Image 1 (cartoon, each protein chain N blue to C red):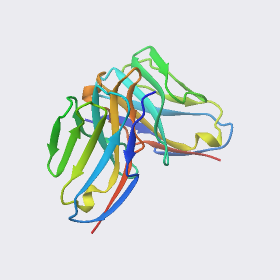
Image 2 (image 1 turned 120 degrees about the horizontal axis):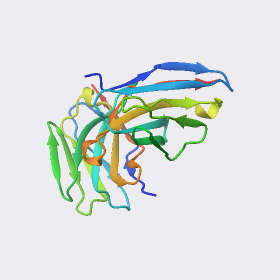
Image 3 (image 1 turned 135 degrees about the vertical axis):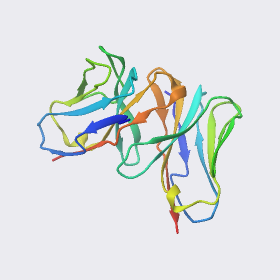
Length: 113
Length: 110
C-alpha cells in the first residue's frame, strides 16, 4: 500500500508565484489534513476535510486554499507565495476518530525566495 | 485552546542508557498518541492510549497515560542509535482533530 503520497518532494518558489501541493491517499480515509512544520514550532493545522466536498479552516489558513473533489485527493493551493510560507508541508489522513491515528505523507519542503 | 507541552525539548544520551520524555497539558484528552519522526520523513504512529492509567509496551518503549488523562510519558530502556528522532505526542478529542506538542528531539550516541 502506498498510503499517503505527496508531490513534489522539494520546491523553490519566487515571491508572488503560485503552486499546488498534491496529496493522494489510497486507504479510503474520509478525513484528510494539511499541516506545516517549522523548526521549534511543531505541527500547525492549515486546513482539514471530513469528506469529499467538505473542507474547513485550521489554525493557520491564511494564504492557502484547498479542495476535496474526491475521497483520495486533497490538494493545497498557494496563490501568492510569501517568504513566511517557507516551511515543510505534511498531508495526513485518518479513518475519522482519534483512536486510529494519522497516516502522514513524507512531506514537501517549500522555499520561497 | 488545548495545549500539549513536551519536555525535554532536546535530549542526547549514550547508547544503552534509559530515558523518559514527558507530555503534559492542563486539558483532558480522549486519547493520547505518540509519533516518531525521522529527518526528511513524516511522523509515524507508535501507539495510542485511551484509558486513564493505561500502560502500553512496544519492545523497549513503555507508554503511560496519566490517570486524569492530561499527561503521558514515554520511557525507553537501553536506548539504541535507531531510536534517534523527533518524538511527538498528540491529544485527541478536539473539534478539528489531534493537538500536537512541539516534540522532543532525541539523539542516541553510539
